[in-house]
Amino acid sequence: MKSAEKLYKFHVENLRAIESAMAQIDSALKIAIKEQRQDLVSSHTRLYSLLLGVWSECRLVKLLFEKNGFGPKEREYILGNKDKNTKYDQWGKALEMGFRKQYNIKKAKLNPTSLLHSVYTKYQTLLSILENDLMPIIEIRNKLAHGQWVYPLNSDQNEIAQEQMDFLREENLLTLRFRKTILSSLALTIHDLVVSQPTFERDFDIHFKQILTAKQNLENRDFEKYKSQQIDRYQKGKAKRRY
Image (tube, rainbow, N blue to C red):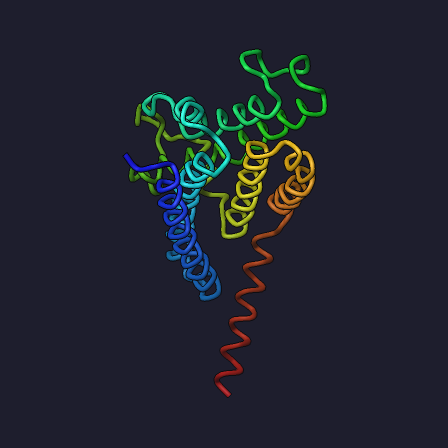
């Protein structure tokens, strides 16, 4: 069996390769938008969504093997039975174990009694981000990975999964970029929590501000406006090259 240090190196290389693939799809998707190739825009957006889900899985296991972070028993608890624990469950357990580890809560339920109110508020905030921003990515990754590229289906595969269908229709290059920023900042926050309580307390607001800015952009940035700007720049560039 490989050592934790060796496995960490494997996860780092895997994550680097996934991020490279995402950067290539980001560039290809931007070109497709400029050239108004809707067929490519659609397929590349789905591929980007799939890769973001893959990225979130790899980012979690890298987090679990960070130096001075989780121990073997903690990793075993977080990963659990892979047939019963979803990736969302594992992220939630990583967050839970981080708070237990740093605030010395062995078995008691994490609540305002076992944690200081300010600490518990941070815990609830991060749980909410996991549910609202990680869960949709994981769910759509599972649908796409099972070939449900146009019509995501429910678990019985006898009806449209409407939430995932809506997600596919609404996601675009900008929203996927913002979601990745949110998940990146969340992973860094959990890392700080596990490795060092003072670091977590010191940098929480920095990471949360990045998350908040990305969430605001997610809600407010107009993709149609962005698309029009890209098309206009592309057309002007073509006209200049022609003369």
